[in-house]
Image 1: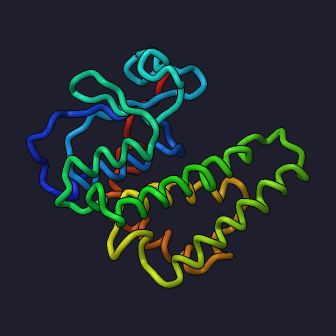
Image 2: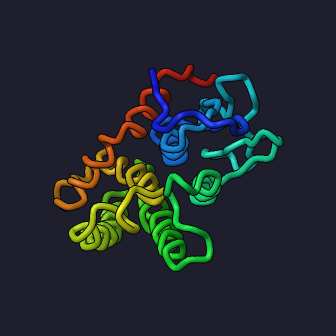
Length: 218
């Protein structure tokens, strides 16, 4: 069973739509870090149906996770936006620097880098039909981005400041896909230690366990 990292607070219950092994793990980790109550709904990326029988396209016309439904019925999409929204609900936990500060801009800088260069940069590798020479081009570009991350993690434990932030939840999530692309993270020692450190967090373990327990979608 999962356990919240912080005691539950009286906050509106939200609904997180997720699919295994996707970027929706990032906001899920953040929800666990915050100890917020939430409902977890699994999405079948092929059929676009949910474990509760909904048409996911009616929830998010973009057709992909993550999506966070608020108690008002409004739905937030795009992982970097969702995790910042969640972090700002409980600023005392310190998952994001205060808005308007340079540190917050640094956080957004990392979130944009991860989404455009690592997340989007690795997406073509999910297409097994791509010729090997084309895959090699994408891998080479991705390796240069991973070299940049390695340089930064050599001198620090986290991406921003001295503690875990939403950027770390996002980077951990997308780097977790590398094994599926036959990319050995061991090539980057500091990044390897980073992944081990983040992966050992109670929030990460709890999110993964709860996703495994959630009924599959139709």
